Length: 440
Image (tube, rainbow, N blue to C red; front, side):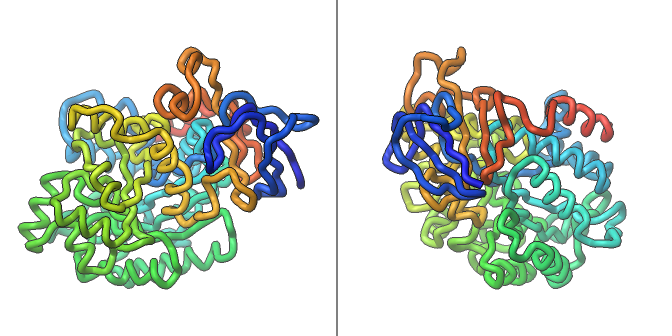
């Protein structure tokens, strides 16, 4: 079906333009040109491509406002996270993920990279269909109007040289070969379905021994699919990795063949100079998650140094401390100001590119994130007359002033999922309250 939208302003590959007509043909953009609105539906403010949330743990949404109640660090936060993981079942996971993804859609996200490791039932017993939880996440994304790159995660050990215990048992498949059998079944179930990408993930160097990593990397190579991994998020993890393997996490992943142009290193907070070179020279993406990294007191990663060395930067909401890709984007710049005591390290276009085209490409959707003919029909319109954005202009208005609350319209894959700031599923706040309440 053909539809035409008239954008008051739109961010095109060569900059912001006024009075832009975007014609859609099904789930794709048919044409983009400047012109009068005529009978086209009008989109006020600045219209940008759909945002890509490159790193998400959907069930962590239940932790917002809970883990902030007491002091602690990443490791104490993790214990609370395990408690929530232990209470989820396929039905409650579907409800929570659907509401969380709907919140993302309200924030302008049209594609999510779900780092999925909650595979099995209590005690690690597989469901009748061992990919039941993965299917629930894909259904949730579709209900909310998002494309999804389901990054099926290999998670085998509870730490360096220790087995899985407690809720962790739900994450493991035994070994990488058994993980690959299950992941292959999941990939086969969605073969040829353009809104779903089945990728792979190595949870971390503490959760996947080096000798198991090549099997996961091979899955990525065989399917030409994304491969993601948590990397050097914590200093303690780095120290334990060096003690165990006499190498940094980046070096371990490099030697296992897990870095490369389809790979993404998530966080990459505490890196040695040689780590930066290995990541950049291998063309590995770097996913920064600033709102989570500051919430967990992880530290500030060397994003600009990585970017300048040739590593592309993407953005993710990770633990869902908040879901606002504009905040993630500007936090990359603002956090670096605190670290280096200089302003203006990043341009608005670079940060918005990380949240759009670069993020989509890292998730296996290189034909998204741009307002050009042939791309996915994703249009996110941001008001420029709210109390936050009034008096601003251009991309700076979005990156440095707007919040998710300023998104008023979202077209995702040609489907209008947000109109006047309201999701087609209804009251997302109520959905979240009910889904989280089932887990308390």
